[in-house]
Amino acid sequence: MKEIITQHVEKHLDEYMRLVKEMYDHPEIGNEEFQTMDLLSKALDQLGFDTTTAYICPTGFQGIYRSSKTGPVIAFLCEYDALPEVGHGCGHNLIAAISIAAGAALKEVIDTYGGEIRVIGTPAEENFGGKVTMVKAHVFDDVDVAMMIHPSTEDRLGGRTVALNPLKFEFFGKNAHGCQPQNGRSALDAAVLSYTSISLLRQYAKPNTYIHGIIRNGGEAANVIPAYASMEYYFRGETMSYVKELCERAKECVAGACAATGCTYQMSVFECPYEDNVINYTLCDLLKEAYQQAGRTDVLPVDEVPSGSSDIGAVSYVCPSLHGYIKIADPCVNGHSKEMADATISAEGRQALHDGGIALALVALRLLEDPKLLDQAKEELKQTILQNK
Ligand SMILES: [Zn+2]
Ligand SMILES: [Zn+2]
Image (cartoon, rainbow, N blue to C red; front, side, top):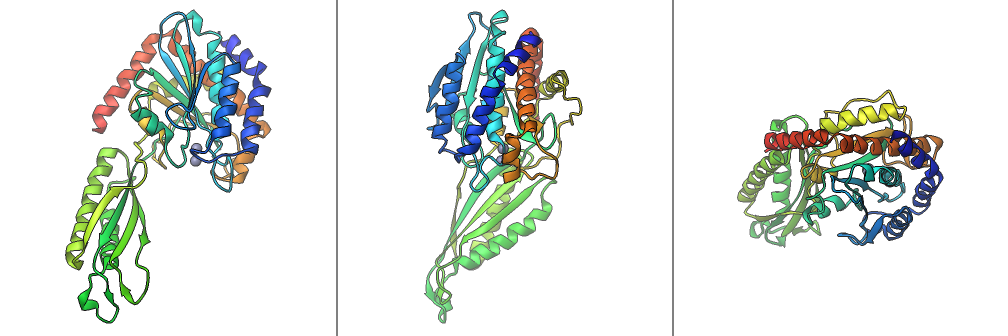
């Protein structure tokens, strides 16, 4: 089986690399990936998948292959949104190709075991969180396992991310002439006092908590006491339940500032909240094994110090999920850079596509061969969710 998978990836490697290059040459940012959606879904179509475009999101897609026998639903996730200025500086073009390679290779062997393969195009990871939209639309409710591999400067089994709640605070006061301040109430003062209080709150937060914000609007003219001000904040921490707790405390800070300045406020969620990424160690162990089989022996363990936030978090709470990393560049290359984009079309990028595609398919193969492993991954997820509540 391993031979069939390897041979299939190798046979189609030039074709997959063409997809990577095409996306590199024509990068599209989140929710605008229309050409890319067409490109990738056509490729899946030619590989024998039953393909839907504009799936859930305007630039989402899905390719399905159902074996004649029943079995688990295995999802390979494609990201394919680029960044302004640096194009595919996060390497999502390679994520898409790796998942397509894995899905197509697994298709060659799945009939022996039974089951269903879904290659899902999840758009706008960088800005709008396509996976969150898809989770809300119940896309993953009947998925048994979801997997992807992200390009990096090291081979790694995964990494924690922080849960993120983006809050906007709006302040309402009363305009007055700058020389008659006694008649006004400064919304800016309420914002500044809130900013200070929230900054003090930060010291009392648990480790791995990040609170960072800006004053979006602080008035229009220096000689007018501002009646309106606003701030935008990211509250991040190890779990969403803790982040929500912090947000409640920040709300108290804002309420206090408003009481002190005679203003009122409104609080709203201004962007998409992200859950933290639940690591599934059962799947990580399988990835380690698969990386070794694909010739990658120097694989780092899960990075337990959370950093950044990603929409994979939403998926990771619904079904066991795997978000591995594969080296395409040296550690001196920054994420979100032109150099990282260039690495996706380099010889190292091609090797990562080869090895990553094979490794993901091999993880899936192990789950098909031994259904107990899938049960174990599900049980592990159940336990982690209970702990995080
Ligand atoms: Zn990124
Ligand atoms: Zn990324």
